[in-house]
Length: 178
Length: 264
Image 1 (spheres, rainbow over the protein chains, first blue to last red):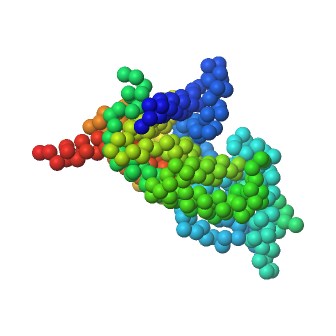
Image 2 (spheres, rainbow over the protein chains, first blue to last red):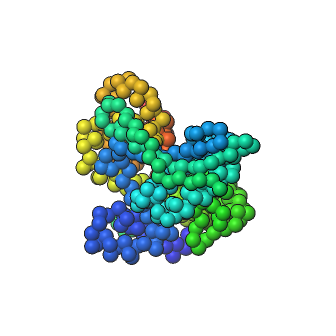
Image 3 (cartoon, helix red, strand yellow):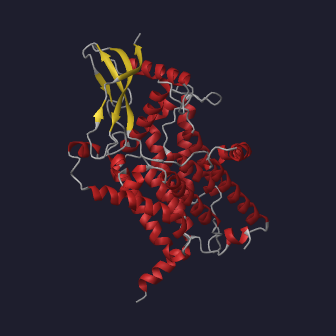
C-alpha cells in the first residue's frame, strides 16, 4: 500500500461518518451550518436520511392506499398488482410487491397534499400517467375500464390488543378513462 | 492513537472481505430482480415519474439494468473489481434515485454501502480493517439513533411497541391473525419482543468493539433481522442489514470464536 492510500482512506471514512452523523442532528443553528457544508457529500455517499424508524413510537394510525377500477362489467374492481401483469409479479414477487406498496403510499400522500418524496404536482402527474396506463392495459374486449380511482382507508390499530378499526375509503383522486 | 492507526491496524488476511463482497453481490442481484417488473413504470422518459434532468429512453433503462446486473456479478466474483464496483454503484444509485421512490430504509443503506464497496480492500494477506471499522460505526449509528428517539416513546417503555408494529396492516405479515384473535399470545410475549429489540439495538454499538463478543453479537443481529423479516414485510431490508453486519466482522473475530469453540 502506498503511503498516501491509508491517509486517503482514513479521510474518506471520517467524512463518510461525519456526513452521516450531521444528518442525524436535531434542528439547530449548528446543524443548519454543518448540513450546508455536508449536503453535497451526503448526496454522493447516500448518507442523507434520518434513521428514526418507529420513533418515538410505531404509528397507530395509517392510511392504506389502493387502486379501485370501474369497468363496463363491474362497478368495483381492485387492482392488486401492476397494470397489464395479470397478477403475476415474476421471480421475486415477494420483494416487488413491497416496492409497489411503497410507491402507492408515496403517490397517495402526494395526491392528498402530504409532504413526502413527491410534490403534489408530481404526484398528480404520476397518477394521471398511471391511470392512463391502467385504462389501456386493463381494458379487455367487452370490459373496458371506465375510471380509475386512487383511494385510501384510514386504519387504527394502536390500542393494545384492541380491535383494528377500518375507516370508509376516501377518494384521493379519480381519473375517467378517455 | 492516531486516526490512521485506529482505522488501519491490525491488518489481517482479508477473508471476511470476500464474504462481504459475495453477500453484497447476492443481495444486489435480488434487489435488481425485484425492480425488474418496474423498469417500464418507474424509470426513463416514459415512466410515471420521469427525472427532470436525466430521463433516459426505455431501451437505455433496460440496458442500464442489464449493465448493472453484469457489473454486480463481476464485482461479486472479484473480476475487474475496480471498474465493475464503480458501475455497480452508479447503477444502484440510478435505480434507487427514481422520483417515484418505491424504496425503504434498507435500499438507502444499500446505496450508501455500494459507495463504500468501491473502496473494498483487496490485498490478500495484508488487508486494512478500515472498512470493518467504518461499518461498525455505521451500523452502531443505525441502531443507536432510533433508540435515542425511542426513549421519548410511551410504547417502548410499557412494552407494547411490538404489538403495534405486528398489528400494522401495511407491513405486518401476521396482522390478520392478530386481528382475528388479539389474545392468541400473552402480553409478556409482546413486552419481551419490545425489550429484546431495545436491548440488542442499545448493546450492539458497544459490544461490536469487543473482539470476543463480535461474532456472537453479529449472530444475534442476523437472528434479529431474520425474525423481523419473517413477521414484517420490509422487502430486502433484513438482508441488506445482514450484509452490513457481515461487513463488521474481521478475520480475527472468526478465528478467535473458532479457537474458543475448539478449546476445552
